Amino acid sequence: EADIYQTPRYLVIGTGKKITLECSQTMGHDKMYWYQQDPGMELHLIHYSYGVNSTEKGDLSSESTVSRIRTEHFPLTLESARPSHTSQYLCASTGTVEQYFGPGTRLTVT
Amino acid sequence: GESVGLHLPTLSVQEGDNSIINCAYSNSASDYFIWYKQESGKGPQFIIDIRSNMDKRQGQRVTVLLNKTVKHLSLQIAATQPGDSAVYFCAEFTGNQFYFGTGTSLTVIP
Image 1 (cartoon, rainbow over the protein chains, first blue to last red):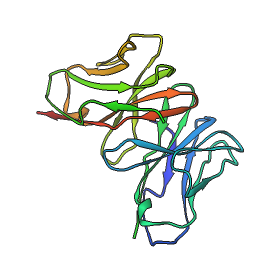
Image 2: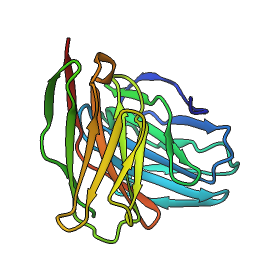
Image 3: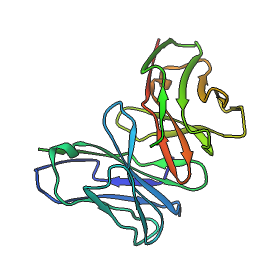
Image 4: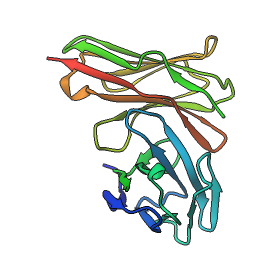
């Protein structure tokens, strides 16, 4: 069982709101990732981090930001939510080979 | 970006039969390849990985085969059980990123 957690699990929010999706892991992993996934589709990388104070942009990063102030914590912020942001957001961390995923946050923007 | 694709979007098998899920990749420089299982409403779960210098690796009821000549990866599940019903993703690790393909939905018929 992976020790990686995401909150909230489900979120319904109106257009234009600012939201932060939380992700934390207790495995001491340096590398962490945020993915966006629509049902039945592949995962798209949003942001990733190699360690504290390190963040990199993925393919879908333009409308969100991340921070990595502590090893265990990697929050994702959408400054202004839009209906196109409706999706599932998955956080992951990697030790050596295996990538552990959190349960995901299912976001609906109305 | 990288291209990792699965040949078949859906697969149905009888309980007790063997399942084979296929995946094609495009980057011959990938360091290793991973298979994930994703059940409905959950994040992907690591199944097995294989290094690029290997041809075959076995786990518990699963075998991954890597054919670098044709850039093809397969996951074989022996004696498929109802609990194996899920979406299966292959991913390749190149540089510091994971690249995921579109999943194959496996349905096990009792």
